[in-house]
Amino acid sequence: MTYKRVVSLCLDGLDPVLLTRWMDAGLLPNFDHLRRTGTFSVMNTTNPPETACAWAAFATGQNPGKTGVFDFVVRDPRTYSPLPGLITMAPRRGNEPPRPKNARHGDPMWKIAGDHGLHATVLNLPVTWPPDPFNGRLLSGMGAPDITGTAGVPTHYSTAHPASVLNLRSRDERIVVRDGLVETVMYGPGQNTIPLQFRLLPNSDRVQVTWPDGAVELELGQLSDWCDVRFPLTPAGEALGLTRFCLLERAPNLRVYVAPPMNHPRQPSVPITWPPDFAGELYTWLGNYRTLGREVDIFALLADMLDFDILLADTFASLAEREQMTRTLLDRGEDDLLISWFGQVDTTQHGYWTFTDPQHPLYTELGARKYGDAIQRVYQWLDGMIGRLLPVLGADTLLVINSDHGCTDWRRSVHFNTWLRREGYLTLKETTPENAGEQVSIFGETAVPLTRVDWSRTRAYSFGCGKIYINQEGREGQGNVPPGPASEALEDEISARFLAWRDPKTGGPVVSAVYRSRDVQWGPQMFRAPDLIVGLKDGYRVSWTSLGQISLGEPVEDNLSALGGDHISVDHRLVPGSLLSNARLDLSGDRPHILDIAPTILTALNLPIPAEMDGRNRL
Image (cartoon, rainbow, N blue to C red; front, top):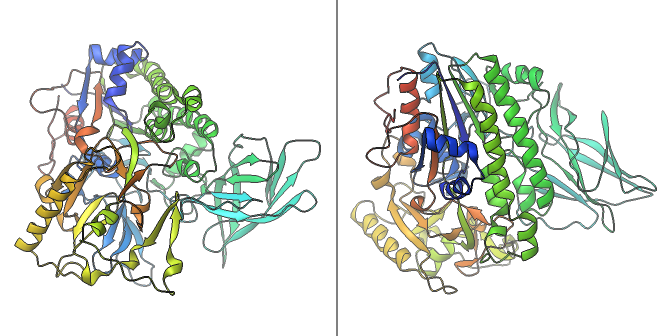
């Protein structure tokens, strides 16, 4: 059967276990309606089960060996330095500076639809920045930067000047109150700043924030509305952004949160939509909306800025904003294919899972009473949205709802390079007076940067979210393991030791499975792939320290970060996604896979399935 229109709701992190539990309990009547009258299935995800890898596979119907999206962070094999995993730099043209380019390879389904004369709109899907031209419209999602060119770095102004627990994820600014006034600056693109004032209002618990072209009064614990901010650029022009503020504490310390200044949808500094004027069209229809590639500032929670109450309130505000955007596009009726991404389930599971897991080291009964139902409430909100959308779709519209993965407990943090060092595969340079100052502390863990690795005496190392690379001759800059049988034997040896690893705290295994990339991925981009993908057991995740440093502590330690649920670096079999539809999809044979979504949608639109797609049609 073909359809007049396809609507794809991408609910990041929608977990089939939680979904089933709450459908069975009668808490999700609209999800359950789809289960009874259409389709509900557990859905396999990519290996590894990371957001970027999975949504790239969703878009193209191709595995990571073809899309080239293997991790959020990849390494330069020549220098062992980190590179962004979602973008690459296009070759320089003439005197133009290098331009960022989407790292994803393979034509996404919306481009294929456009090439056949159909019209598609894509809203906020990850791995879509910079936006590529096609016959349709797209608002970039995860990967889209703020006006400073980063993934969003909030600033914490404080008279107490606490140290950030996550370097490069936040900026801490020491401030001094003089006669009830703070004089400081707000950070913009490059070295540009603008004056910023905090004035303690007398006989009040409020603080007034002032900048050159605006002012707002802050109430304790309440995010302000979105505010326009302008940063003058040299030699001419300006960068227009959107930011907001939150008074975190007024006394005894003054603490103010300033959100990463996003590209203003009315005047973005870099292209965030295709066509470029689509950003302004959305602004005309909706007013201000979020253009940074994530729904809520989860990293501000990690850095002890925003608290759980503020983040949860903002989660529901972002849900309402995204539903309004989706409904506006639906009501306009201009699309044969509408894809809309919602990231709130994922961020809420990351942030609030701790309060559902009595075995988590940071679990408290008070926290459970306050936030133990936070995840359920987000699922119920989305259930209500589906109930509001179903009546307007009609029988000629195929509705597909899917996630990219599920979620599980994160009680213990795994330091892969620390383990490789302990097992004799990785060696650090000796500590000297010159490099002793390189040590940092992250969540209380002492760590050193990867520049401290002695590559001449290192045979294997980890990079990104738990990927293992052999330090191979001819590929790595200082490789010392011959390719072929020697590298393969080392892979087997490391895999066996990983599988034998036991957590001294629990006595149980840390690792569920170890996969050779070439056994689970295939395609022309495999030269970028890691050698081994380590799939951890439930309760374990790669540590924050591992994403750029090497912990000098134990290889596995309690997770003391604010995030208690995750899927990254977990064995993909333990965190499958969810699939629902208003149609009865073909569930015969193997369990549905995220690779199946693109060919299914193309079939629904009566379009051919390209030979390079790895999934299969489920209609």
